Amino acid sequence: MAHSTPRMSADERRRVAVRVAMSEFAKGGYYGTSTEAIARRVGVSQPYLFRLFPNKRALFKAAAELCFTRTTETFVRVADGLYGEEALEAMGQAYSELIVDRELLLMQMQLYVTAGGSDDEDVVAYVREGWTGMWETVRELSGASSEELDEFFSRGMLINVLVALGVPGDNQCWAAFDEYSKAAATQAVARGAADGPPDGGAETGSP
Image 1 (spheres, rainbow, N blue to C red):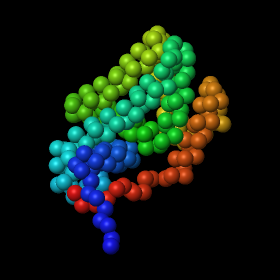
Image 2 (image 1 turned 180 degrees about the vertical axis):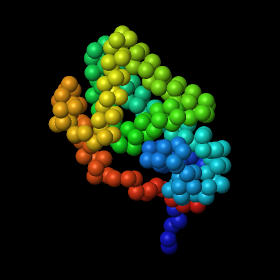
Image 3 (image 1 turned 60 degrees about the vertical axis):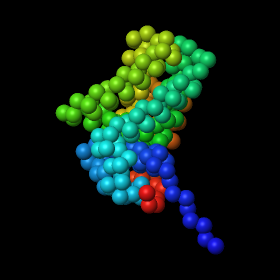
């Protein structure tokens, strides 16, 4: 006798929707992504999606939170028991590994583009708070000076740009980085080329 697949709870469906939303927003940005496309990938109707999230803005904010949380939680984990330069080095290496996930990288870039070009102060403030919260996490974990934090985040943004553009680790643009970062960059670029656009393979089923 065939067994039917158990239906997801609303909380489970909401978690799936946030992951799918991050994938879609990473590709198309806030304005170029339709909630219809997100609902289709989740496997629900658009009206049901709006029962989980009241509007597109709320879904974008949830995806933004997932993006920032994955990064800050990684920093907290790898910096445990470390301080100063050792903590910064551990977080820097961990970040190089994080952005092998191209969707996470592109979502982060889309957050800044959206906030920079939006007249929706609610969205702008949310992204701004996510960024400053990440900055504060690194400061608290490392005890770094303002100059050290400037260098840490400047290097991080340069890594974002180089990986997003597909510049491999053996290119001269990476000359100032250590071998660990160069290897991670090469891996991230290769994975991005191999993966291509997300295939939409999310959990499906009726709500």
